[in-house]
Length: 166
View 1: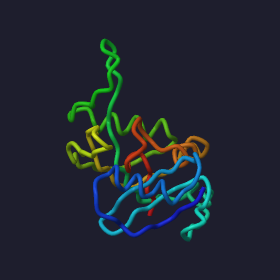
View 2: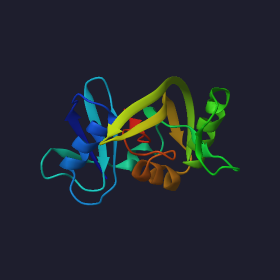
View 3: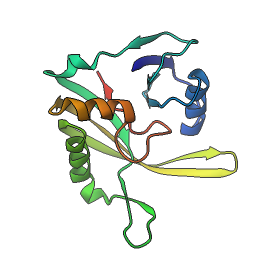
C-alpha cells in the first residue's frame, strides 16, 4: 500500500473523486480523505505522476495512534432492502462495532456533518456523513490491515471509509 498527499482542489466530493482516479491508473482500489489543505490517498500501487511513499503497517502493532475517518453510518433495511442511514442516537454504537470488526479498539468522538451532496452528470448523489476522530490501538493486525486496504463501512468512494492515521 502507498500513501500519497495531493493539493486540495475545489468542487464537490465527486469532482475530487474524479481527480484522484485520474492520477491512479487501472482498476486498483483508491481510498482518500479530504482535509482543509490536502487530499490524502491510500492506493494499492504508486502513481507514476506524483510522489508516493510505501506504508509499513507493522509500525502500528504496539502503538496508540491518532486517526480521522469520514464515514457513512448505514445499514440495509430488512423489509425494503434499501440502504438507510443509522439514526443519530445509534451512531456511536455503530462506530464502535465497526472499529471492533476491523481489529481496532478506539477512543473517539464524532461530528455529524449531515448530507453531503455531489453531482455525477445528471444524477444527484446524497450521502449522510459523520466525521470521526480519536485514538486507536490495534487488537487484531490481520483485520486492521484489511481495513487499511479496503476501508471501513459500506460507502468507500467519494472520500468515505479511509482510516487516516497521523
